[in-house]
Length: 115
Image 1 (cartoon, rainbow, N blue to C red):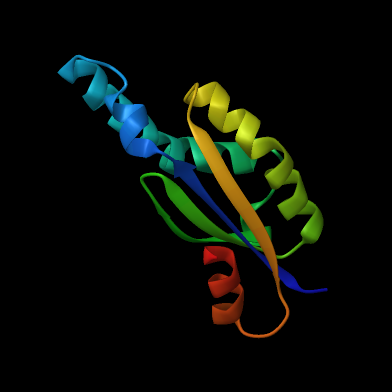
Image 2 (cartoon, one colour):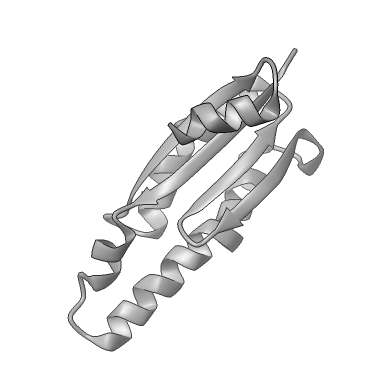
């Protein structure tokens, strides 16, 4: 049983943030994206029943994250629900995602995800 690299990125963040015409809305949009990829992201992993010992967050920042899953079922579960959960938290923000089995080198899997 291999490991799986999961990656997601919010699409068109700048347009999402600039959609509002008031500075307060722009700051709020920026903070919303930051919270999405930090606190909310972790909470969703937990709420889906994926334990910390079954996944490792490699990196997370405003608008994107990379996670290493030990189990394909957990990776599939997260792939299935994350776009819906992200849209509920930040309506109208689109996320793109990819899951890649790490068959050889971790860096090869990372490169495939980036493409």
